[in-house]
Image (spheres, rainbow, N blue to C red):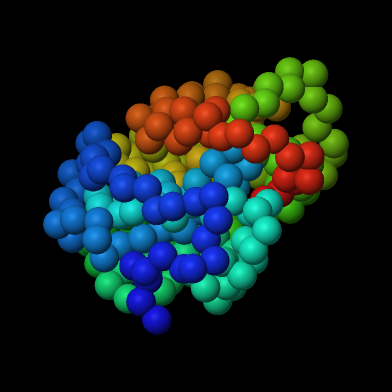
Length: 252
Ligand SMILES: N[C@@H](CCC(=O)N[C@@H](CS)C(=O)NCC(=O)O)C(=O)O
């Protein structure tokens, strides 16, 4: 099945054109001249951390793409998602009729089709390190993810972080500090953004939402991520989202 056709079940959503803007300092060149053959499904910008990761990977790659926004709460959304991704999850990338779902697979695929974007470090040792911490984010930190769900609009200054989530946060801080010390920042693997920065960006957002106390190095990295122009663009759209759903205040 190809992707560019709008599924007939779509409600309250339509593909929105996304103009290609190369990330500042990324050096990436577009692998495709226009967005006609490249589509990324996402859901709530306020709540969906995986949507943000996939979307940032697309932006870092420099590849022009269209967004298909699936409002998860809408009737028929699951049927629509099934049409877009076999996993019934977002994000799902469709590129020239090839569907790639699951965020890590999307990142690896983008690295293959846009090698000039260097989404993974060139050095094999750094590349293995980058993949390791991306994998750790992908499969771990369940306590932090469950108790501090991404909620870009919210600010909870008095939030109590329970001990299991605190352990996750300490491990994340250790990962960040190790990378920043080894590679000199401002991003995890130096001056270029990699898949790791996309994977940890929703964590930076959570630390902002819940006013999590951080070491100076971690706070600096959080601020670097939150100051990216792509985060400003995503946040503006999240603030404009009408949905405010209690049941979405969870890891989503
Ligand atoms: N392991 C998946 C996680 C994707 C995921 O959990 N997506 C959530 C949104 S953040 C989703 O699509 N939920 C829809 C649903 O459960 O119906 C990935 O890496 O892409």
